[in-house]
Image (cartoon, rainbow, N blue to C red; front, side, top):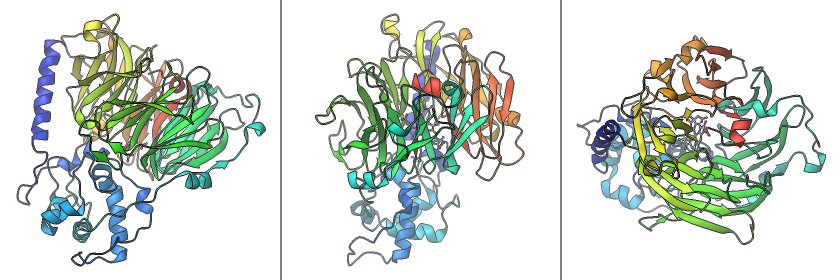
Length: 585
Ligand code: DHE
C-alpha cells in the first residue's frame, strides 16, 4: 500500500474506531445523538416488508405482561418487521443490532426502551421518535411490545412452495428457436421497484420491448448461462422466470420460496448451463435449488446454525448474495449472520456436498475478479472484504478495506497502471473507493491487499462499475444526504491513476440531465451496454413522480439519451443480459 493510502486508511480506521467506541453504550434522553439515524448506512437496513403483512397472535400471556390489545400487537409486529427486524432479527435474537428478547428488554424496563426508541443511539439505532417517523403513541406501543415474547413467522417448506409453483408454459410447449427480432444479449432487465415489474429495454434503440409483472418490491435479475431465461426475484421471495425467445418475452414459470428474499442465480459450469436455479431467503433462513427449466423446487436447505467464530447458535442467518462458480459445478452462497460462505456442489442433490468456509459476519454482496476464479465479497458491517478461490473452494484472504461499510454490488475489475489487475469497491459509510490487488501470479506482493484508496463524491455509495472496453470507473452516491451529490456520479480515468496522488474525478450531473421537475431523484447503479460503449444510470424518483434512465457515452462522457416513459416507475437495478450472464464488470 502507498504511504498516502496507508495514511488515509489510518484516518479512516480512526474514525471507524470512534464510532464503534460507542457501540454497546446506551444513550440517555439528555445526550441526544445528532442525526445518526439519518446517515446513509442507517437508511439502508433491510426492511422485512412482506413479513410485516402476516397475521400474528399474541404469544401465551404471562401475569406481569404489559397490557396490549390484539390490534396493537398486530400493528406493532408490522412496524417491527418493517423497521426493526433488519438489524435486530425477526426473532429479536440480534444481528447487526442488539438482541431484544424479553429476558433482556425486561431487565432494562419500559422507560429505558421508550427513551431508546425515541432518541436512538450513536451506534446506529435511528431516533424513531424525535425524527417523527414514529408518533409518541407508537413509541409507547413499541416499548410495550418489546416486553412481550416475539411472534414467530411461519416456515415455508416444500408444501408451501409447491402450492405457489406455477408452470405457465411447459418446456415442450416453448419455442424451439428465438421468435422475436430483439437483440436479447443487449437487453437491459430494469427493476421497476415499486411497480413490482421489470422493463426489458433494448440496448440499442432504447425501446421498451416489454413490461412484465414480477414480485413485490422486485430486487434483482439474473440470466441463465445460455442467455435465454431471465430470472427475477422480489422481496416477497417470488421468482418469475421469463423466456426471452418468446414473442414478446413472457413468464414461463413462477414460485415463492419464502416470505422475504433478495438473491437468485443459475448454474454456469460447463455441462450444467441452464440446468439449475438457486434462490436465497431472508425468511425463513434457507436456500432452494430448483429445476432451471421449470423452477420446480428440488432441494431446500436451512442455513440455521452456528456463527463461525463464537460457535453459538443463530436462529435466522439470512442468505445474501449467491453466485455461480465458473470453475466447478458449485453455487457460492453468502450466509450473513453466521459469516459462512457455502460452496454448494450441485452435481448430486440427493447426496449434497457442501464446503463450509469460515469467512466473516454480515456477508452481503460481491462479485468475481476478471479471471472469474476469485470471489470477492463484503462483510459490510465489519468493514472487510473476503476472498474465496472458487477453483479450490477455499478462503484466500480477509482484508479490511479501511473504509466504512463496503458496498461493491458486483464490484469493478480493471488494470491499474501501477498495481496491475485490481477489483474495486465503494462504501456506504464514507467517500472512499478501495482497490484490492487480484493478481497472485503477476503481482504477488499486492494480491488480496488494499493497494490504494481514494475519495469519490461522498458517503452513501451503493454501486461501482467499469467494463473491459472502458477506461472509466463510475461511482454513484445514491444514499448521500445531499441532493446534489446523490444525483451525481463520479468518473475516474483509469489510465491516469497513480499510487501517490488521489485521482480527480469528473462529476456528471446525471439527475440534472434527466430534466425532472418534481421530487428529489437519486441516481443509482451504473450498468454498461454489451459493447461497453455506453453506461446507463437509473434516476430513481418517488413512485408517484417521474423517473428516468440516463445513458452516457463512455468515451466522451457526454449525455447520449434520456429514456422517459410513464411505465418507468421507480427504476433501480439494470441488468444487461450479456454482461450479467458473463460476469463482466
Ligand atoms: Fe439490494 C443486490 C440485499 C436494498 C438494489 N441487495 C443485493 C444483494 C443483496 C441485497 C443480498 C446481492 C444479491 C446477489 O448478488 O445475489 N438490498 C439488500 C438489502 O438487504 C437491502 C439493504 C435492504 C432491503 O430491505 O432490501 C437492499 N437494494 C436495496 C435498495 O434499496 C436498492 C438500492 C434499490 C432496490 O431496487 O431495492 C437495491 N440490490 C440492488 C441492486 C442489486 C442488489 C441493483 C444488484 C446489483 C448488481 O449489480 O448486481
